[in-house]
Every structure is written in structure tokens, then in C-alpha cells.
Image (cartoon, rainbow, N blue to C red):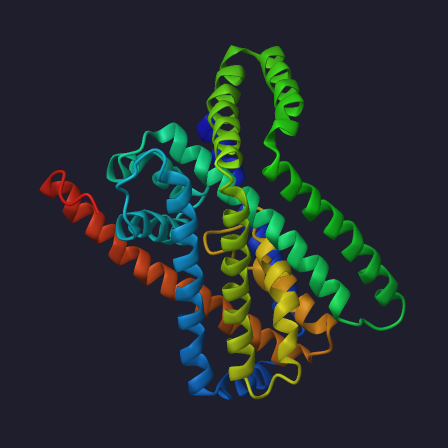
Length: 332
């Protein structure tokens, strides 16, 4: 049953990716798209991977902060190898295989048992989701969309801002989540023992990690690192937008970033082909950018995000494989 479910999930992702890629490109003039993509400023394009690297450096520092109670000797390099390698695997393989590798395959490398690693990855995802929702709320409020869209955007920004602030409050005071988690456990127990065991394996370490982080007052620091992560990610979009001299409104990148990133929650192919492109293109055009220029920006920023992380992550995988063959190796 599980292999069938995974196959259906992957097949649905392929279908959705194809549909959204067609929606992205169906009205785009090829000549105009090519002309827009050729008008690039090399200086701004060089800045894009620098911003991306700074953002991933913040990701590594944030994750290391969560793992250090379980391994005080864990260094930045060892933590970074595991994180960036998992991103590369996610870029190349379906079904979030990189997340599975990070939680279980890299457990020995990190010298942290799989349960706490899984819990920290879940906390990382919650922090990212909360930050992105707040970023989207701010972007919707900032960009004065025309006509009726303005009222809708402002209302949406208030709703999203409330959701994001509530999520941060729950991360800061995870004791408030205990009744919710208890209800989920009761529901899982009602379904069956196997489901109950799976829920227990996820919820117990997650809640313990959240309470531990809030007890050590680490959560405000983690929230600060999360803000920096997505500030640098947004700066990556912005530098690519500035590099495109044909794009009239490069500031749209600050709306494109949360919209495009949140769209990756939808089932798709590795690398989020189609789903990312369509929703990011829609956001770029909503601010006032023309179709061909907006599409060129989205395609270039997609490559600018995918290629460096995949190449660097591939190198990290090689480092991990060589070190694993060599034995325990260096702790840092």
C-alpha cells in the first residue's frame, strides 16, 4: 500500500507540474522572452549567489543552535554538509527524499539520534512557514494593487499577519499546543496502532524539542535567524530582478519570494518545476510587470536558486560519502 501511495503522489506531482508549466508559458512570446533573458547585468547576477550563500549560512547556524543540546561539539561545517546535501537531494529526487536523508542518513554524521534530528527539522519547517506567512502579509500590505485588488490584498495581509503572529506565539509558548497534540494522538489511536505509533514518533520529540527551546529562551534567537534566512532569500530574488534590465518593477521580487516559496508546498516534481513558476509569475505580474519580462525573471531566479544549491549539495554528498568510508573522522 505504501509504495502505491508514493507512486500516486509522485504521478499527481508530475501532472500538476505539467499543467502549471503549460499555464506559465502558454501566452508567452518566445522572441520577447529570449530578448528579456539576454538583458542581464553581470554585476547584479554575481551578487545573487552571495545573498543565497548568506541565507544558507543562517540556516546552518539556526539548525546548529537546535542540535547543540544533543551534541555540544557539533560544528558549523558538519552541520552545513548535512543541511545542504539534503537540499540537493530534494532538488533531484521526489517525495522530500532529502529530508528523510537528513533525519536518518545523517544521524551518525551529526552524532545525534534520529528522533531529535527529525524534531529539529520539523521546528525548522514551522519557523520557515511562519516567517513566510508574515513576509507575504507585509508584501501584500506594501504593494498598492489597483482597484478592488487593493482591498483584497489589505484584508489578506491582516489575516495572514494574524496567522503568522499566532504561529510565532505558539512556537514561543509551546505548552499551548499540548491539548492540540493530545487530540491528534487520540485521533491517531482511534485509527489504529500503527498510525498511533507513527504519530507518537513525530509528536513526542517535536513537543519535547519545542519546550526545551522555549525553556532555554532560544526561540527568540531562532526567530531572528529565520528572519535573516528569508531576508537573504528575498535579496537573492531582488538581485536577480535588478540584474534584469528589461524588468520594469524589480521590487516585485519581495512579493514573488513568499508566493513562489509557499507554492512549493503543492505536489510537484523535484525542483518544483511548474508550480513555483506559475505562482511566482502571477505575483510578478500582479505588481505590474509585463508577461515576457516577468516570465524571464521567474525562470532565471528559479535556476539561480536551484543550480548553486544542487552543485554545492552534491559536493557535500561526496564529502559525506568519503568521510563515512574513512570511519569516525573529525568531529567538526
